[in-house]
Amino acid sequence: MKTYNYSIDNQDINKIIDFNLFKNEKNILIQIFCGESKDKLSFISNILIQELPQSICIGTTTDGEIYEESVTTLNTVISISIFKNTTINSTYIENENSFENGKIIAQNLIKQKTKLLIVFTDGIKTNGEDFLKGIDFVNKNTIICGGMAADNGKFKQTYISCQNKIFKYGAVAVSLESDILKVFNDYRFNWVPIGIEHTIDEVKDNRVFSISKMNPSKFYAKYLGEEVAKELPSTGIEFPLIIKNKSLKTARAVIKKHNDGTLSFTGNFKKGDIVKIGFGNAETIMQDPVKQIKKALDKLKPESFFLYSCMARRRYMQNLINAEIEPFNNIAPTSGFFTYAEFFHNQGHNELLNQSLTIIALSEYEQTPKHIYLEDAKKSTNSDYARTIKALTHLIEQSAIDHDLQTLKLNTQKKYSNRLLASQKQFLRYVVHETNTPLSVIMSNIELYEMKYGKNSYISNIEVAMKNIYSIYDDLSFLIKKDQLFYNKIKIDLVDYIRSRVDFFSQVASQAQSNFIFTSNCTNMPIFFNETKLQRIIDNNLTNAIKYTREKEDIYIDLKKTNSDYIFNISSHSSIIQDPKKIFEEYYREEKTQEGFGLGLNLVKRVCQEENVEIKVISNEDSTCFTYTFKGGASENTTS
Image 1 (spheres, rainbow, N blue to C red):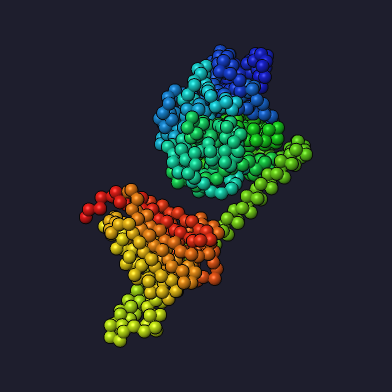
Image 2 (image 1 turned 90 degrees about the vertical axis):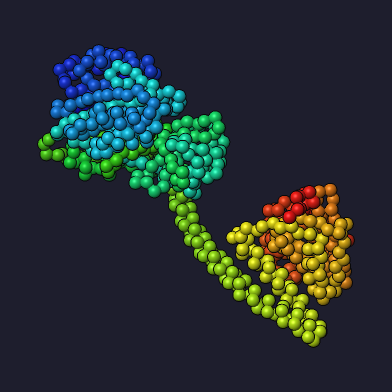
């Protein structure tokens, strides 16, 4: 076989191409890579079919064209390949169902001797992943190459062609059938993930509605800046989402931004997919790609290279992208285009790629393979700009590696901490369970002792201490069980209940040289509330008042009904609370001299938030007052 490549560059096509070279050839494949308009693609297709009616011709619009050792834009490149022992067939499908398009293309073209399928689809409406699944449904073994058409980064309308017909959507394809044609394919990715992992929360096929609980456009704005997000999808192609745990490193680039900020990507996601933002590793992109596949090429003796590369590579590397193309042309004629997504065959199935350079090498050569000599790339890759790009890329990649190592360490420490917390929780469960019985025995024996021998100062001190222990025990028990139990509400008389708790702790208050003074503007206040939760509110406030009230000062407890609300006030003369908001935080204590862990009021706050109880704290030189408003408590249906 032999390939002739032509760059039209706004010149007369008849002056560029000598059609007499091909008049007597039977097996002619023409690929048109058009970076211009639909009209230009149509015009060139018509001339080619008119001059070479025996040829098979497919074409696509582009985001840049590959011509020999260079890259062009807004140009048209024509690749004409002549085969001696290969039959070429073509087909097209103009349908919006991507999966069915893939099936029909495969059914029409793949035969027993088919060695290669070259496929171009539109770049806007086709779901590339579903299209390839359609091909896989029919045949998973035939090598496929090509890609999705582009329109110079506008993401408005792409075009493809078959013979002299132009299509807005669908697919065009050619098959190469042969006994001797040898095909080699490979790809280069060179995009690396950076930053933290993110989760695809909500998705339908290739349209993503939520990433890590964020609108996708806002996600890009957060991590890449408002300017990048504003210009999506064109700016997002260079910073794809890289999917974790794929057979290949697979990127998905943005192709459409919807009015609601959701984004469509070139391929599908699944709910729960773990992704990272990717960036191009310029250092590896500029390395000679042929060196890695030299042994395979030695065996093949390539006669032509077709390269289908992602638009992101050209836009990211700019003029330096030639360094990636040149080594192929040093071996054999090279052509191709920059796509919106690339098709690649990998180990028995087809993959939709982004950010990749896909490589197809063809040969009908049957003699002893020749040794391929690698030529040095041009010195452009050693320019100051290239060195700067390499250095910045190396810095980013090393920073990403350091970040991942640090994240791994933190995750290891987190797992260890979680195991400790789980052990601590289990220990507390055991303590609470085992403490209940001895506490009950002690309290029962205190009561029996008082009944038989009467009270004395020693027994009173023991009883006060036991009541404090009981209060702590109840708090711990609630903390451990609160997420495992459903707390039913029952009818409670708020006046009687608070009075009973005041009576329970009155002995504790007396020992601290304080007295409770309880008042209420109603004889009864029925409310539906969970008794365990109510006890946490009342007991913690009573014990805190005892703990922090100054000696020989009274503690005032006032309960009143106001309209439909019940208001519970507890006040006393104590030290001024410097930060009333912080006292409800876990482990916060203003008076370090007092015993405790700073958990009681945090527990109270949680209960109040769950039960719509309003909290207000006022603290000054005269007094400190905690007010709890049970909203609507008096208006609830309090009948049994």
